[in-house]
Figure 1 (tube, rainbow, N blue to C red):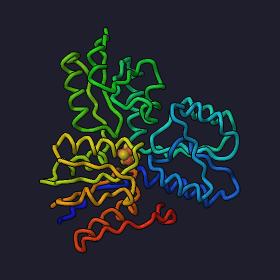
Figure 2 (cartoon, protein in one colour; figure 1 turned 60 degrees about the vertical axis):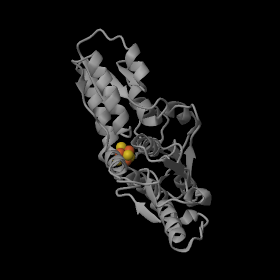
Figure 3 (cartoon, rainbow, N blue to C red; figure 1 turned 180 degrees about the vertical axis):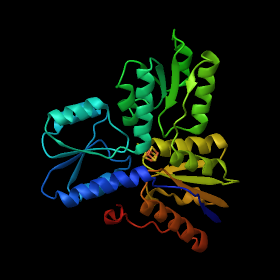
Figure 4 (cartoon, rainbow, N blue to C red; figure 1 turned 90 degrees about the vertical axis):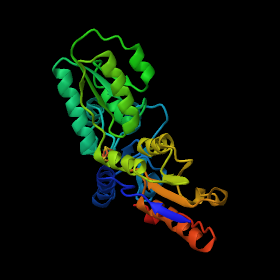
Amino acid sequence: MKIIPLVPRGYCKGVVNAINAARQCAQTHPDVPITVLGMIVHNEYVVRALEQLNIKTLEAKGKTRLELLDEVNEGIVLFTAHGISDAVIEKARQKGLTLVDASCSNVVDTKKKVQQRIREGYTVLYIGKKGHPEAEAIVSSSSSVILIDSLEVVQKLTIDTQKIALTNQTTMSILEIAEIIEAVLAKYPHCLVEEEICSATRMRQEAVLNLAHADLLYVVGDPHSNNSAKLKNIALQKGIPQVEMIETCRQIKKKDLIGKEIIAVTAGASTPTYLTQQVIDALNGYASTGTLILPEIDLSKIL
Ligand code: SF4
């Protein structure tokens, strides 16, 4: 059995910066309540590790960042790597909170481009995931932005203007957005396309697409993580016979390993290196000894 850890995999610079911003807040303001508005990055273990530093995460399915902010009345509010809308920033200021913005620079750049197109009078088509905080921050900013989350939405579009621009959430699948862009251009050939998949997302997806062969691919990532989910989709579209998304090595099942010759491992950009390395070590151990050892997760090693 051969184990292939794909390169690159795991943490991107935006995630590292966001986690460092949170740790720094905890170090420099040990007596101030610190609240992260939403999951700092989409990984439950990172959230739990932050709790150990007394950093609270506010997350409620279906609630927007603006609604979550109602529950923060003191201290520091930290905005996540996924970006934040101007309305949330304004409301946090009005509440007298101290703001720490850990938005990834790629997300901020996309937001600025969208704002620029809106100022120029464009209707902006934004390919993204409904309810995702990055998409929420951009779509909620103006009625001139239309969320495109499927080909069906493109088919139903009725836009009566020459000024149409198209962009996307940074963590989408390169294959899915290519299909949507093609459909939009077929309908609106004059549409100005500004593709915004970030290089971290693109390189992790290309590593999966360039994989010569694997009988099984593990994607280490949290079910909330869009870029991890897209890695799984890409692998399935490529035709890898079995693709398993797991949060930790504890979810590896011995029955899945039996009879496999090549097993590859990748990880979403929000997956801690420690968790991915445990998966790789467990698989290498099994390949050399036939025994699958799945260690406990040590939260102190996550950050
Ligand atoms: S996946 Fe891309 S956009 Fe998201 S935090 Fe990482 S570098 Fe930034």
